[in-house]
Image: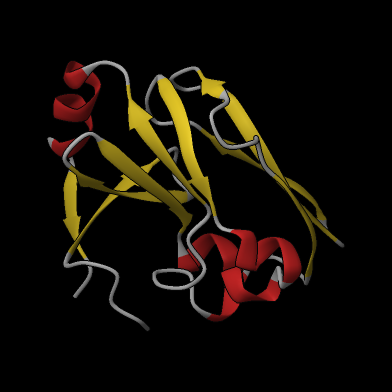
Length: 123
């Protein structure tokens, strides 16, 4: 497993997040991906799009159905991982590294504090 950072925070049961300043990176936990068949398509918001905390902001389509991606904070999409749009399998191959999904700049610093209180280790 690739190291993206030493601390990941579980979010919505199937996602992980990391926080650097006001920027939250979102990905999918290896355990959630293990139950999925091949990822066929990734549907993500566009850069500079506003997202709402705890609301669906994207979706993965698999042969087994779809998996929603939720925004952990209210904010603005800074970056989407264009590599996974071209190669969705990357999410399953390297979920904690190159397979990250989206980066959001938080609008409210309190959202960041709330998220980081549930830190888990990736050991």
